[in-house]
Image 1 (cartoon, rainbow, N blue to C red):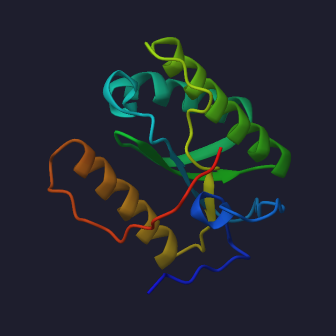
Image 2: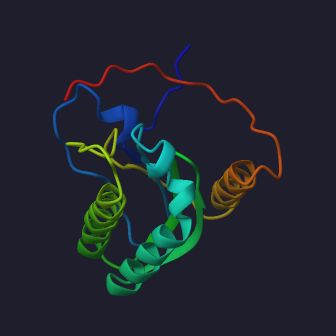
Length: 165
């Protein structure tokens, strides 16, 4: 049984596969949960190996586009980021900048040439303040602990998708 998604508050990731383009829901009054995923992030391209570089890019671009970052989890093949944007345009530019700069920085170090670094579009979800927000921050923190090997990995429900690029 597949998980049901609230399409008015979520966008990207597996939700966009096979769908026509539509507007990403963005809010400036509530926090958002972002996930950037790359199946190409293995070996020397592992995001975890370049955590300092990635956190530097995130920090620099957050200041540039007036984005407040609540927490970041850098895993081997994906990033979880809890953010709040001041402007819609700043949020769009932040997504473009971080996805492009992280890919460019890591692909410079790659032995093989890749056409696409990120597997899917950036997943974003509008988070309600209170219990939902605390739950997202706890989830991001749990991902950080799992990535560092402090706690064992807890398997989650996986979705099979076909990506045709």
